[in-house]
Figure 1 (cartoon, rainbow, N blue to C red):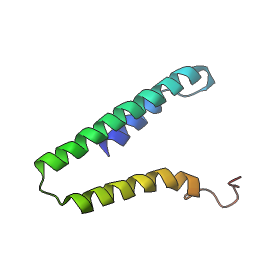
Figure 2: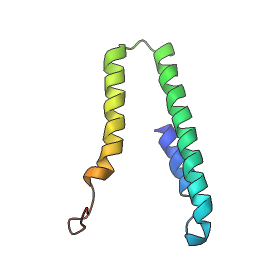
Figure 3: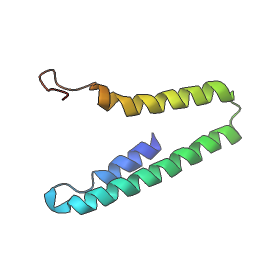
Figure 4: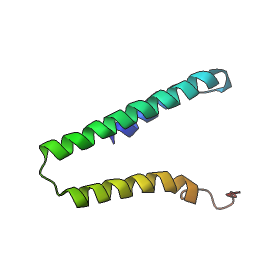
Length: 84
């Protein structure tokens, strides 16, 4: 949750067409920092908390696929909006 909050805060800081380059730059930097935070937190959990590796990684990978696939599948889209 913390990496995603950081990303959202950094990405949505600027709004409007005149900030397009800054928005794209913020998007990429936000993603880089989010990946670093996520990796660091996964390593921290694996080192400091006694967890079973297989269920932890299965759940983590499943959650990542859910985040990536939800926009593509159109969950939360208004009923009258077309996908393609």
